[in-house]
Picture: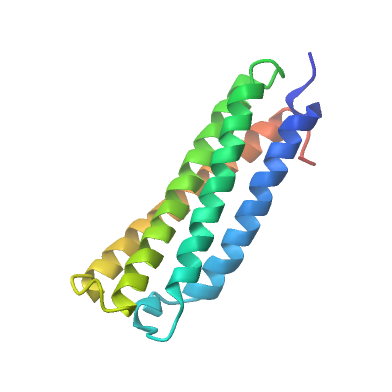
Length: 154
């Protein structure tokens, strides 16, 4: 049985998630750099970022399906598999909340969602930040499990 970190398909899935995460962080930093005032940007194209979030969610779903199909036969360490699955779920929830915020802001900017107030936006943003912290902590746990197996180059 191969070590988890020697498994080519597992490394491929980790890399695919890393690429999704990199794209997501770049956009997150661009939009929320030091402020929650995205709500106040009237000429901003929120629909573009709503679609971006949906695309990322589709890519994560693809990874989850591939992981479910291959993990048992490929001899992936159980602790790493649990950590990776927990990380994927946490990242997915953060991106779902990001997409929801973009959708609400898009609707508001088009005059369709008059009930989406600044207070609701701030509440959603706080929830979103909690989800971001959760996926970061799950990522740290996953990284620790991988390092524990002896491969920090994954």
